[in-house]
Amino acid sequence: MTTGRIYVAGTCDTKGAELAYVRDLIAEQGLAAVVVDVSTRQHQQPADVAASAVAACHPEGRDAVFTGDRGRSVAAMAVAFERFLRSRDDVAGIIGLGGSGGTALISPAMRALPIGRPKLMVSTVASSNVAPYVGSSDIAMMYSVTDLAGLNRISRIVLANAAHAIAGMVATAPPVAVADKPALGITMFGVTTPCVNRLVELLEPTHDCLVFHATGTGGQSMEKLSESGLLQGVIDVTTTEVCDLLMGGVFPCTEDRFGAIARTGLPYVGSCGALDMVNFGAIETVPAHYKDRTLYVHNPQVTLMRTTVEENARMGRWIGERLNRCDGLVRFLLPEGGVSVLDAPGMPFHDPAADAALFAALEETVVQTKRRRLIRAPHAINDPAFADALLAEYRAVLEEA
Image 1 (cartoon, one colour):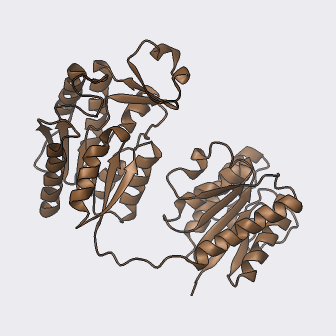
Image 2 (cartoon, helix red, strand yellow):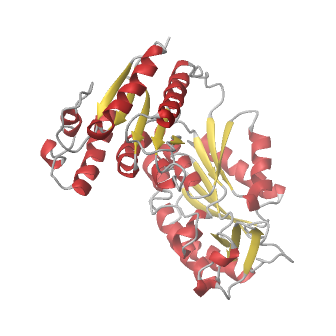
Image 3 (cartoon, helix red, strand yellow):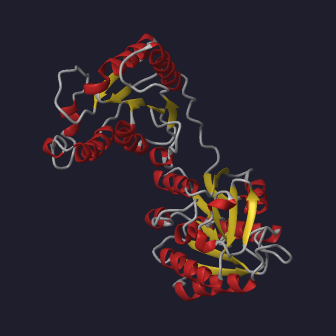
């Protein structure tokens, strides 16, 4: 039997009828639902949870929200709503309705909920780039088609579908599986797939392998799960997102990459996977100052750029500084035979000098201790022997942990 309530969030001053409509449709499915008002101005529309109650959760109180300046008020209400939702122990799921402002206001609170808790955002911006709203969470986005400015023949259908969708997610939530195998986070990119496939094959009998695509949000998702306590450890094969952060690619990590490992002390084995490349879109989107670089068209939508000696030295220092903040058991392997499938003899990104600069910068930066070590391996990253070396080090740190 479902316990808890579905929170229906939006600005009642402009969307009161739509929010009530969604709440009532959910209630018809036999589920408890409440409308939470996140309006940033005073009004007379009713709500189950008033905007003033949400605003009171802001660290500086209600007055920080109801400022009369829309931009400041929306930003402050987003903070208040996230704190409000974190304080609830009865959130079975959440559905939000909003335009661009409402989506920006509601989605941070959704992201704060655990992975697996049903989250659905009905939004006028859901047909565009939703990465800033979804982030590393599992928010489902539904395009509203018409603006959320009253009930009409289109919005009634879309909102009804949304109401029934969130009700279905909550009512038919899968049972929590008994954790018969510990969960392990692994990062992968297309050019490190053979390595990861072998790791999964070897680990599957004893571990629940969670593989994350290293596209910026993939690494963030892995680190979010690390901090949630759901992972036993991490084999971070593919740290390529660092390239895009430092060189302006389209799949960047954040400045907090490796931060979750430092904060949690999780057993960690990492490597230099795909640090030979920066990702861009179609070849015509490559910035002009990179046009004369070594470029490789991965597919019509993705162009890869080989990193230089200087860039590899910079990445080695950046990663090394972050590994130094990790006080848990850390092993970072350096694949001397190449860091991706493209970085091999005869392949377009083969550049031993660039790899050597990366390894040297790591060795110059990382303060090695008994618990934090760099290990050179005389293999290419996709050689079976390298996957075996990663696995051996992971088993060693687990045993020591």
